[in-house]
Image (cartoon, rainbow, N blue to C red; front, side, top):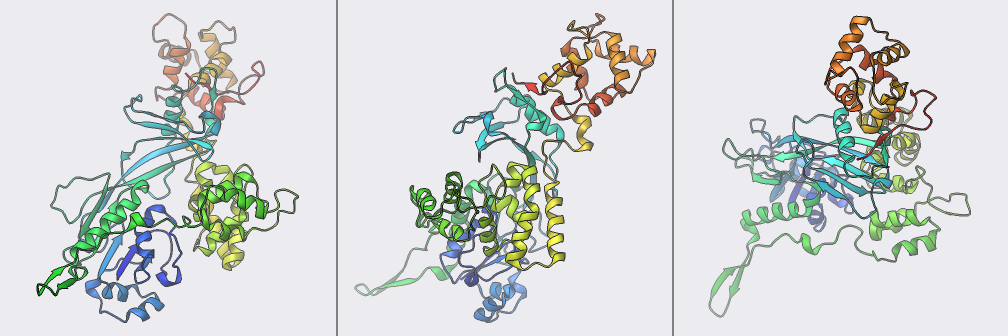
Length: 523
């Protein structure tokens, strides 16, 4: 019997009561496929860390019924802790160090459905990936070491850098705008370090498994979503190999000797994921034919829940339309339906945040769309979970606070000063200042624009500004000089006026002589 400690998203529940429960985060599922395979194993999710040597063993059955994880840990053959804080002993070193990487999501038309790219030679040496994802395009970078934060907003300079890098990949006659950023966030990677190792050990981008010699607790830290089953295999193989009770003796009567049987190994490779049973390629068609669900919705449901899709669609309510007959959408243009919220509540979802970011991917795909569905998700969850008005209001507040940590089409006001001009942004601004259409800016045009911005310049200020922009000292400013000046980081009254007047993508502040939207030529 093992006691698995998973410190992530939910409350504590004994395994017998949630035998089919799959935790919210896939990295929290690191041990789940093996734990669920044996009902004698027990899981403590979002519970306290358990130093078993400090507790007196109790009755296991009673501990299960009461959710008494202290007693369960005391009576378990091994305690496996998936808690990146490793707080079983406050004197130990950190088990992980933080590293963050920023990501943006762009509309799906920026990349083919089945093709992406990786650039390992960007302007600052970092890797950048550009991939189709969930009907959109995700752009992201390799991470940078830093202290972890709660609800960190993605830096605007990172968003702008990724947009500028994207220009290299796409056609010159295609535009991308700051307003094309549908969602943006910072992802955190746990760089693992073994706190039980000698001082000076290196951090790892792989997972680390270690057993505390004082408590006997085996913990696993670090890793990533794509290797969670390998993590499960490695940690269970380690625990099984270190517990002698798993090596049993077989007697050879012919020779009067006994021999030990092999120590069992983790069987994750022989277990199918939840939903694997009952899946087939024709399953979306069966769902459509039986329930009258729109095709993209049916395909999404099967891709997400596999053979368990029938449990979800049984919760569908009629749309009131001739077609589709079932499957009320949470948000237009996305395949997520209300029945998924009800199903998630019965799978121990407790927060609106959980629904928007993990049970669905709406927050990651489109921040504005996620914001719009909060009231309806709250209504459904209140109905399913029996929330009071106070609880419902608090959940709505917490969800909006959570979504505020995502970027979207419009930069945070505090980030406007770091807005970088991409090529077409610059051309839009440059052309609007260049009233005579010469292709160069002179002092009079700079002065006129400053006046239009409500920030007139004195002759001394004008001369100083112009000299700063005119790098080659030829008495006129070309577009490259203008871009270099704008992006050099130095603050001036004139630049501040441009930044405040220029809305996202440069679409609204330009004069009426230029029709159409702004944006940036890519290339």
